[in-house]
Image (cartoon, rainbow, N blue to C red; front, side, top):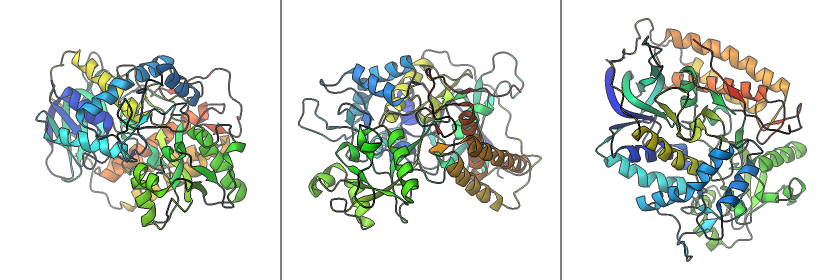
Length: 531
């Protein structure tokens, strides 16, 4: 491994999705900001978001209506204060994006932009850029971030661990001082000091065999925060998106919720609709309900998939509203104006995460968490469609305001990464085998429907993997794959522990052993052991 280097920023942001980039642009007016991203700056789960951003933007809509829809979707577990905070700030967050030049789909309304509807929403309130909203937003912000003189972007870098005052033996309040970051391209660990650090690394859905997330969603921020002493909450609530394209040549391609919002119907192979038998809202029920219904019908009838039918809409409408879905399906031989789309549920969003307050602060002084990494209280037991990008924007602004209100701590000299007692790995095939095993048993045992026995089996396997991986980590030099696997196994452990603690079925967590729902919802909070 090559010689280490040391960098210093006012604010270090780990992650380059919407939360990370919007935060960086707000802070760069005052501070020197560093952004760490595992691949390129525009490669994130945010960029994959198709549907749009939910916010109250039209006179026919209201804060109370959006609030009620969110609370219903969250199945009694949303934090009312956090939920109202996000929804009340939603309009200004969207207008900030408009001011940055994001090319949302226009319309001939007083508002000037087209609003669509998605499952769980009682109104049309989803502003979007055709069916590739995340990509449009990311492209706009990425150009601004790349050219900003106060922002330094470290691409092909991944966080290894946070540096805290307690870890390096300093007295006084324990606070985050920066992070050790692995430079993938040059195979070295970089020591980065920071007055403030922000985790914006996304979720942990790559713990599952089938997911709509990019390969980078490996729970890095979640794991780093836990190892640094932060609480996590509600990780049993993994949202499975109901409609991921089922095709041997398609990987992680999502069929947007907005397709059902425009009238698409779910059908069995013989054409029978099944959603009305599961929920009076039918195809416009919330994601947890639709995903569970599809899972039930697939198991009942022994199916590999079900079908989404939007053939009642003319091809011109589909090309205009869903150009990317239309084009991609055509490449695979599916004409969505004539053919039903084969779909299956897939792991989509981590509703729980690192516990934060309304300013995005974590339990560790100087450390913030924003976006999917955080558990803000907005999503409860099930995220309402298109509330995720909204959460990124609102809490990025909240974090920026809180950071700007605080004096910059004096930078400290930090110890460099110590690799004096490790060697190069002998057999890296161990990593790929463990990764594959983890994703398969998480899908089988900790999926849409769970039992106590399945969870116990999953935890037994996780503990075996943890021993292997920790031994490997202690003896060999770090690599990108090892860092991701270490973080993903820890994330899986936390997901299963949360699921085992919940003795009821609520929202995204459905247990055959505990099918009832308690009268009052309580958060599942895990605290790290004191070191």
